Image 1 (tube, helix red, strand yellow):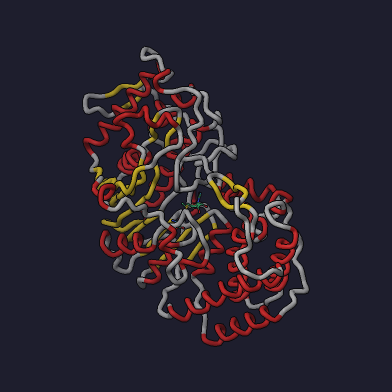
Image 2 (cartoon, protein in one colour; image 1 turned 90 degrees about the vertical axis):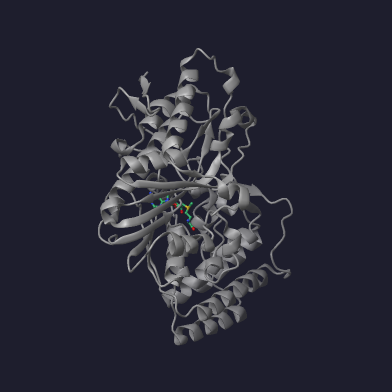
Length: 488
Ligand SMILES: C[S@@+](CC[C@H](N)C(=O)[O-])C[C@H]1O[C@@H](n2cnc3c(N)ncnc32)[C@H](O)[C@@H]1O
């Protein structure tokens, strides 16, 4: 076991140079709750004389030492208790409401960051984990240059389609296709997805109607219009499915019914998609001065930041939380029915390219030099001694911080002096201990040469595990926050 030395300042240093990064696993999280602790051992079961107890003690001493140096702003928990990750607001805003992505930011949170925290002054606004594209889209609404990266072909498609700009002629053509769609018998049908589990999430006649709608728009030769139809189709998938997204996957709906009053499945799908498409057309008309951002479907890690990312004034992002959620499972129906996945190999490639926040892939050792010593030398060995539902969680956590360290290192030379970075993160709870991602990310930022402006706490998170109660004063570490860094 590696030895740890808590220095007089309270900061932890190790006598080992090893970064101890993972052989294993990972994927993407849901931002609502971090409830994947899955432990059979509780803190009160830990022998106070044991190595585990000493690791836990070292960890919380380390957090307290960090808090002495880092400004932790908890005011907002008492006043608003609102998460920046709040898609309810997006569902009321033009363009943002085109696809329900519940891990998405609230546009007003992004707007506030970009207009009050930082001076953009012609620089680039980047979101390296852009999801449905909220940061870059809001940047575009404010007249700034926005750029988003995401590994998911689904969210990349959603974000790009939301950024569409159409001429009056193209809008007229969209409306004429809408009329054709309403009058069409939907005679040509797309083929079933290459995934039998996804087929089971639909009544056969509903799946047939959805595939007929897909057959219709697959024949539209204008890419912008066909993409808008495809996005409306993707938005119809969950409302028509017998299953809904829940936790790290899907669950059967208790009161399943179609989202429209029609009794014929083809009419029901046409009606539902038609209303969504009308809304798209009206939103496009309402936002004529929108400055379209750019989106790239690729990982933000490694060399990928090369050309497009320069002169960056602001980064506002929310990486997957380190909570083992796998977006390739949560969005399984959309990914397969939208032809983003055509084989299991596609799904595996997606999992492997994503940040190490899940346990569904096996990664080669990567970026271990960018990690956080306390994670590699205290959290990981502690977690690996516990009887958790997956033996890969310790290595996932080491890998998670190493990936974020790699990103911070690569971003730094591309940022303007004085540029700001906001990382919205949720802390996690494993084996009875809190993994304070916010403090650890602030520490990581500092080690990568940034100034830490603050950790701003937005709300508490309550894990489902009863063990949470045993955290006592350390419950405060279960929270969702934004880590604000400054490039100086
Ligand atoms: C919490 S979501 C971001 C949501 C976003 N703020 C929004 O408003 O929609 C995190 C995203 O990170 C993406 N992701 C995971 N690993 C990635 C990587 N290595 N590079 C780029 N994106 C990644 C996931 O596909 C997911 O869409």
